[in-house]
Length: 181
Image 1 (cartoon, rainbow, N blue to C red):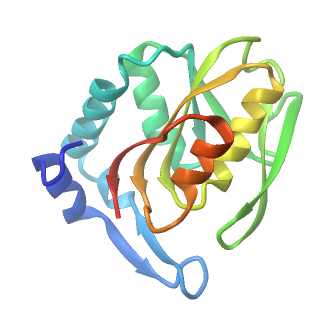
Image 2 (cartoon, rainbow, N blue to C red; image 1 turned 90 degrees about the horizontal axis):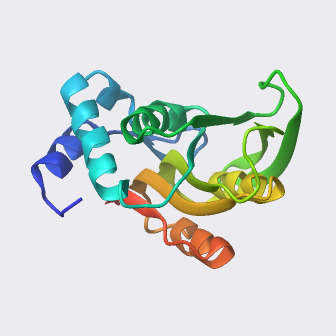
């Protein structure tokens, strides 16, 4: 997205900063006000589609939970399958698991063992890139299923944190994002 574009201005007008969430010292970028604005959601999905349509992908992964929202909408726009990656214990079938560190703790993600086929090229979407731990865990799950991470996509990149660099270094893929802080 172009700096100071009308979409970026609208985006910045509705993003809510929540101090000390989920723990003291964290300034949480809350995207939920975007969800109350159907025209802004549509504009965001259209922008993602315009910027990512040229990518060679076979499926889109959305990371629980906010990555589900725009990941599923983008998958529909690009006519690609949507695959949820969820927190441990939330998927009903056989799963693979990957643990990772968060900016504020530890967690695990899971994917169904039959979610991807060998060699598939995957776009991984989440709402926000901070340290890159969550997205990297999803990327490692993709690799465990012998598929390839083709693109990481985010609404927001917290550029003062090392997520962009961490993902680029581990996966050799420059993350895509709409806006950075």
